[in-house]
Length: 83
Image (tube, rainbow, N blue to C red; front, side, top):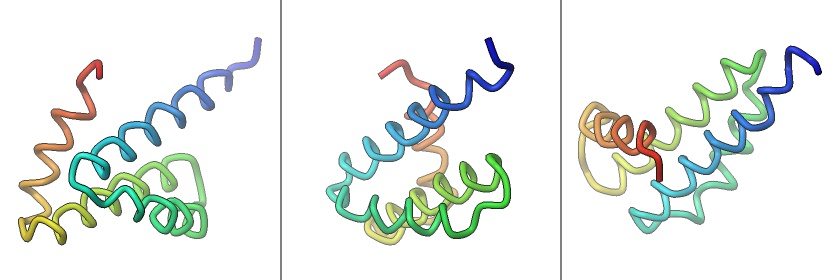
């Protein structure tokens, strides 16, 4: 067992949460561009995850005409939920 066995399940969890909140707000089609951007800007796993999640929140905030902070709070509740 490798000490990096957690990485793939972690990435799947993060991607799933991003896709679900985009879908909830009717902009699931933006996921491909968000993921592409995260892949282009990653220097580490942390950079990739931060880019993916921040870009997701930013896309929803723009669509809903709300602040990044408002959507981030909503996303944090969504992200920490079991669903």
